Image (cartoon, rainbow, N blue to C red; front, side, top):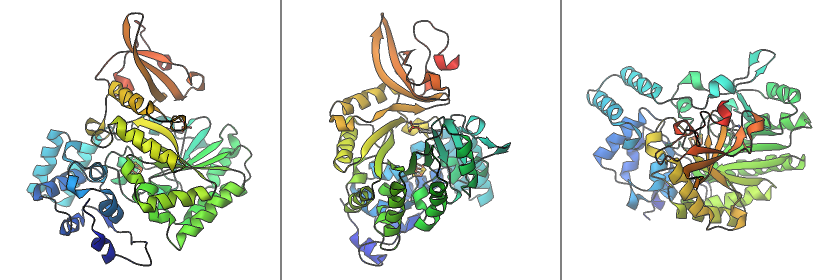
Length: 443
Ligand SMILES: *Cc1c(COP(=O)(O)O)cnc(C)c1O
Ligand code: SF4
């Protein structure tokens, strides 16, 4: 693996913690000084990066990407825009506009036109999940499943790098009407007092761990001080362990994050770090292993999840390896998701039958401690729908499914059957088996 230690040293500050440097369309050509990309590759990055969010950083490019394997390297595909992410006619349109040197506003206009054709808000997030408090919409909260509430702190709505496949992509490209965010916890606390069924608050984004400890504490401490008897678990969804593990090792903020985590644990709440890992490579550096060790030392638990992604991790051995390493490091495998029906689904999506086969082949290779994982699961409008098998029942080939979560609680844990379809890539593509006209969740 080509390793540009000298590149890291150029941006060194204290001790062994390198300085964070991000790369986006404005400066990504600097990467060229160390790692060679052809003019054609650079142009493709620009074309696609005008439509989808693009941000990577010094840790990702120096420690995660294997440049000898670019453009196929999974960590390269993870953060660099890929030509195939745009449909051919969209790609041509943007490429021509750039070649004609159109003004920035015109390019943005074209980008927005394309974005609106890519289902920017899947699973009814805007219509169904935004709750109200005394008639006022709480745009920084989503409450879809009774027990677990999503909270989007306004200061945590970016990430250390952007995943090329991210389903939250619209909020990173300035489609502001699609931004979820809330500044204060007051309304969150009031809402939790009025909703005793909620046991879990999941801080999400973006990446809440982009915040310095002091900011994060401003959101979390009031929650602890409010003494909410129903609040059992605080979850923090993050990809910081993959994209910037130094967050936890930094000599100034690292110990403060640890104290905040310890404070949550000591208050009697369960703290679950919902870590996003897409490939075993992300678990391979000394930095991430040390960061995981420090988090676990606080009494927090780390659970892991990722979508199954063509061109990144669509291989059962990759998943088995990843789950084994996670268990070895003390993490708990939690979800394997199916790529959502938005953005570049045509590039990253894996058909449901194939997804199930990859899941099953990986699952059968690992010990029971890794079989805490559930998947492949679709976060769809009616709920989280898991593919649990492909089989023949009463002479008909079927796909078996199960609701892991449902907007209607009485549907949770109720298996159902769809007609076998090798091409189906999302729940909308499925039709009920056995001649039924509707699925249970449609009735
Ligand atoms: C996945 C998800 C949750 C959390 O569900 P768990 O199964 O408890 O992890 C909560 N809200 C939404 C909208 C989700 O998609
Ligand atoms: S870290 Fe999470 S929110 Fe951020 S780009 Fe990746 S998947 Fe999206």
